[in-house]
Image (tube, rainbow, N blue to C red; front, side, top):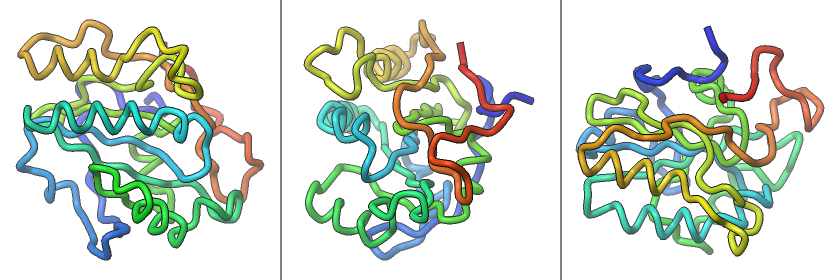
Length: 193
C-alpha cells in the first residue's frame, strides 16, 4: 500500500482537539458536500506564504457546500512554534475560516499519509478521495503562482465534472515526525506523481 491515501480511498476517521476548545470527529463535518482536509502547521514558510490564497479558496467555495479542516501533526519537540498554544494564538490572530485540529500522536497524519505542509485532500459527499496534493504551484511566494490546483479541483468537482488533475505532489516542508530529524521522511513516503 502507498504511504499516502489512494484516489477513491475512504477518509480515515479521527477524534482530535481543536483550537476552539472542542473535539471533532470526521462525522462532525457530515453536512458538507465536499470536505477539504489540509495538513498544515504554524511555522512553515510554504503554509504562511499561501495562507491568504487558501483562505480565499475556502471562502469562495463555502457557498457550494465545501468545508475546510486544518490539521497540525508536526512535533512541537522539533519546532516549538508548532505547539498547541501557538495554534490557538495563530487562530486568534488570523481567524481562518476553518477549524484547526491538533494531531499530537501523529496517528491521523500517518493514516492519511501526509507528506508535507501544506498537503491537501479533497473528499466527495461519500468521503472518497477525489484530489490530493498541492494547493498552488508556488506556495512560498504566491506572486509567482501560475496554477491553483486546489481551486481547479474544487471548481471541477462542485460543477459535477471529474477532477482533470486528481493528484499532484505537495510542495512544502516535510511533516515534522516526533523523535526524528527535522528533514526525515518515512521510508515508504514518496512523490505522488
